[in-house]
Image (tube, rainbow, N blue to C red; front, side, top):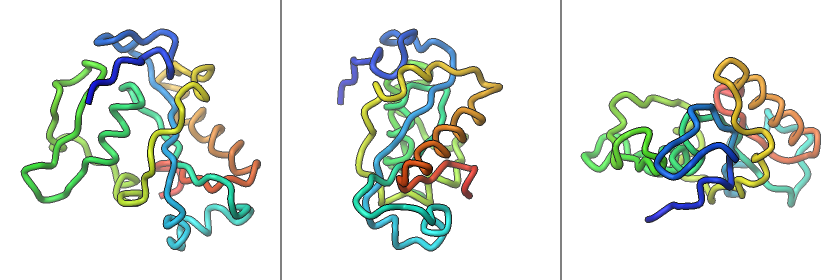
Length: 154
């Protein structure tokens, strides 16, 4: 699947040449995530009908990170993800990629939220990426969205 629209999530990234910064992104989650007790506990003020989102950060473009979340098939030879930004080879094994929150949302992802919503945040530095990720999650929770914020909620 081609992915050529790199400037939507970050004004500094170019095709085949990510900016080198970290990026904040959101993946829309299926309502089935609400069945998980940990998710309900993290979102006591959630209002039915609002979106449920996974908020994360990555040194890749957001589309690569979505591939990492959605492509993981633990224990198979097909356990690969696709790098669209050119930072890694086109098809990568998960050997060095261990991310527990991926397992929490696996099977509940609906698609990447429009990256233009995060364009003004990106890029962020490695040093403040976690802080910004947490701030975005807190802001969305204050708006009564259902939010899973990566390792902050694990």
